Image 1 (cartoon, rainbow, N blue to C red):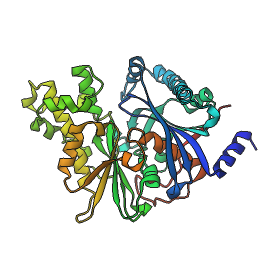
Image 2: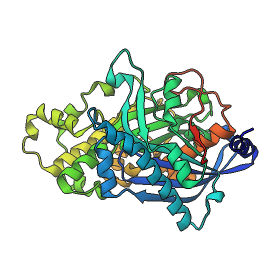
Image 3: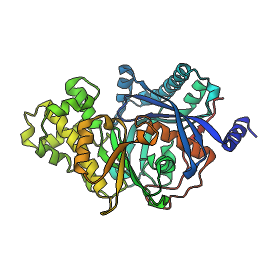
Image 4: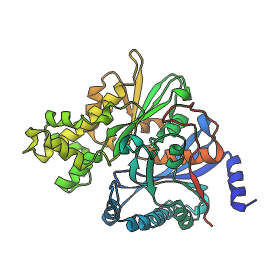
Length: 399
């Protein structure tokens, strides 16, 4: 037997695995690096987050990614070069984190690398009958493995698509394994560039678990904050607080067929872009002289209303639910305050209350997916559209 495969076999038998989860979302603020100690698998998974850091992307790195990010027409050579280059950068970021944490590569069993999404194209969005759902993440796993010297699982979303899903949201699997609680209906709301939530029933039935994107989280707020204020995001919602919501523009922003499409569904900045907003503004005469602060306030309300309306569509009257927030959106009091206002009957908390930092949650969930690929894979989620029963991740050995 190949020595690397023998090592994986032995690793699967151990009571605990040490896995680094990596996540870089569509906001592109940096690479989340989460070192987890994981015991068990499936519904018996137990995770301890031992170290976490967000390694900021430089302005130059962001600029290189934005040359291909969510664009239909690109320099294909540049995309090809970025795939290897970013994989090596992510690998070096891991190595640097381990040095800061006074750890060696031998203290880590696996890396779970999400990569950097550069294009998401579900069939509902591209509408080309010949082609299936598709998505593309760069930052090649072989380069991560060779750079770090650690076996790496990557490219998780392709198997989800191959089994009939849209490649997102993948949080449903890890959410169910580590956050389900008997007797409590939970909604795990993640507000990154795109917002999504997972429904976890209090009866723990995996075949009732539900997940969907809701539309924009921070992506439009961030884009126009960069454009008008030369800031990466609206810190603490201070810009939105100074503005007034334009309800005519808000109505136009909510007209896209995505919001009327059935669940589950996925989307990305390919749809919800600055062009999308400008087209909505052209249909709204009252926005001709709109102040930038008013635009940020309106986009914040747009995210809040579409998130709340999506949640309202799945909750049942007379039942109690708790919403556990994560992602950058939980740090925006205007956004989270509006969601609370629109869902007055629900209890709100952050995933920190459950022992996992909301900022680290998505990176942790990819560590759980890698653990499941190596040591689990026995839980059935039924045969529903959007939540295929599947293990995910391609394996790259360091040599």
